[in-house]
Every structure is written in structure tokens, then in C-alpha cells.
Length: 180
Image (cartoon, rainbow, N blue to C red; front, side):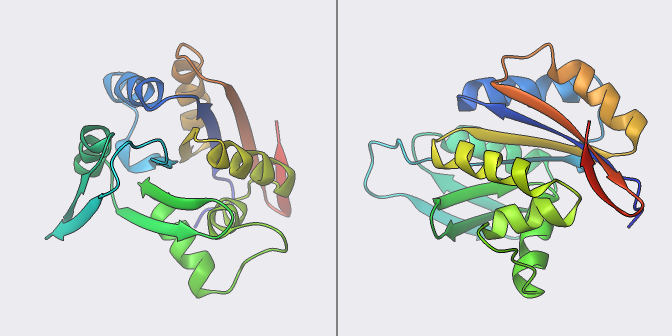
């Protein structure tokens, strides 16, 4: 992987706001292979929630099933994780591979979850990782666009036109990670 890959991470308060941001990025021509989304569906009123996989597509029943189903058809990779300290988490996009890679490589950094370790592995600083894990614990959604500095700045320009709670750009340096 190129060590000069950057990321913009936006936190959204609702799945509707996150979905609108993804649609905005798609309309803007942002490469959907660079986009990830992760969040919980802990506010469901239903006690029975189902997941199944048919070939390359996972299906989900629950309060936000249409929301997640749309992403799983659009983004590369999808998964359901039960993360200690956070709870059940749904993810779509490259973040799935980052989380699995962190778990398989035992790259868990003290005090952060598998999701945090996945973000940390792409150069997100630990203090920001803790902030993003807290957002997930409080039922918010993370949207991550990962790419070259130019691609990330373009994506950030479109993200800034959406209803985000917070947005940060992180630059991966040749000798470590930092935040802009």
C-alpha cells in the first residue's frame, strides 16, 4: 500500500445524513471503492434482526435495513461485527478488510477496538481513533474516504456540504501518522 494515502473521516448523527453524504460523493464522481461506512443499529425497536449472505451480497433486516442494503450493493465488502465495548456494528467498504487485517494480525493497540485498530493501521492517530470509537458507541456513523491527498481533499469538499457532526482529514506520513 502507498504510504502517502490520506483519509477524511466524517461523523454523522443519523443514518439519513450518512446516506445523503454517500449519495453526494457518488454524484460527485468519488470512487466508491475508496469509501467506507460503519455504524450500529442499536436503536432498533425490533428484537429479531437477521443477516444472511447470498453470494457477494449480505442482506439485513432491521430498522435501517434499506440503508445498509443500499451500501452493501454499492460499496466493496460488508460485514457484521460484535465489538466488545461498542456492540454490534455493521460495516461496508475497505474498512472491513482493515478491521479483519487488524484482528488477524493481532494489531490491536492498547485500549482501542478492532475498528480502531483498523483505522490506526491506515494512519489515523490514536487520539482520533478514540474519538471515532466514542462516536460509534453513541450511535453515530463514520464515513471514511481513503486515497491520495488530492482525492481526499476533493472528497472533503463534498463532505463539507453535508450535515456532518465532525469532519477531519488525516495525512499518512512516510514515517508515521498525523492529522491536518
